Length: 224
Image (cartoon, rainbow, N blue to C red; front, side):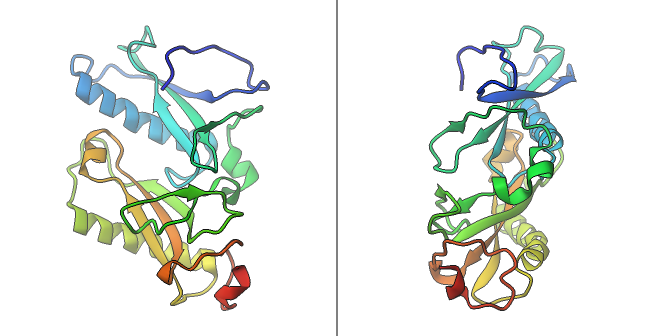
């Protein structure tokens, strides 16, 4: 993503923060496995660093590649960054994002989409703009090296896990707003990214401009 890195104080505008330096020499002679392990490790460290879930917020993780880290054979260097709401790139911040989700609340960093995340295409938009879905959490869905369970089985299992999140978020069980999930496919698992984001989405693609959190039994039209 970046050809060079410049160290700055976290009180100055910056694109990313070092979230962890993890001593690790596994798969040092296997570039593919080492890269996958780096991705997986940095996903888990990003959640610890931001105080949030393993996935489902605008925070992204990245491992510093071997070409950029002279000590890459003996450690995994991880960074975390905040993706912007307009789906166009990394957002600069001027303070440390350590424990940001825990301190500021999940909703400040949640994802909203203009297309249903249960479909094949997902487009992120600011949550103040018309949207059909809101992220409500997420998690790393397997251990490094686990075999992919298959698309249909995996998606069904993840949806089952997301449903309780949805009911707590909405405050009621509804027919016009349902739980959904968006999970990495088999190729993502091979790259060390076995991740799932949980969402609530409107049935039929009805767009809202207000948060669906706590809607309870109020009319969906009250959020337009």
